[in-house]
Length: 396
Image (cartoon, rainbow, N blue to C red):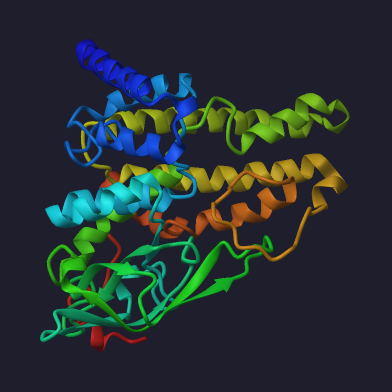
């Protein structure tokens, strides 16, 4: 293990020597890093990796950070890195991996996720967007509507679920596609949120043509492919790496230390409880990431995402209460369409309002509780009367 880590450090130092960050354009440095297999070391050679253990990425990242090397702006391309890339790696053809993974990691192509629909959010498998094969052209024609799509207004590509066989039960008639967001028939409209921003979007698909070469996995096997995406999504949201006393608890702790006049005994007790819970969640997330280094993410990520949402909402509520009248102020209601998701930025009012979405995005807390109950704790599943009914016969 030590030898492997030293080898990666040596490769990283060689990269830095050949492409000094101070004298190399950031885009050129990132291309050289990818081609050297130091982008994500656990990926195969030729796809930004070296087939090394995932745990050794930390050795590379530490060397690059110490040298002041540029990163690929992971917050801007988080959906691509955390959801699209592992799904393409697990289920894509060699041609798809070669075509999409490099520009994805470099940030040259931003990705979004076309899963949720107005009538299929928590019950995602009930989705109604249709894809019909034009056999002569070798293309799928897609019609439907998606909603709550982060980054759709900046995305070049999307991971898309569509129904290809309405005669099958809802989980079995779905196919997974890679959709060109610049294709004719794709329309993106902003959804203004309670924060004033339009971070989310709704996307209308009208006669959108997708080549069969951009189908990911077999026809009708889209739900199995989507599970890879969903498990990675929940880990990427709930298992983000943060420093001790980082994330949502940081501004509350800073206000407590810096403004003693705000303190009360009751608020102190609540802050202590939430600080401890945040630290436990941080350490649990670190342990989960170490477990994931040896394989694919499992349902445990749902538990981390549940904790992330609950803590963010409770901590942001405490912060507003701690600040009193000042906590009711709001910095800017101006309509904007941000390129990155910021859970903890701006002021206390923003954090409080933005946290309300944490229990919805990436799977609602109610659905995740079911997943934890059934797949982690092994409890009996809830009765379902639609598992064997054709999608077209379901009441809607």
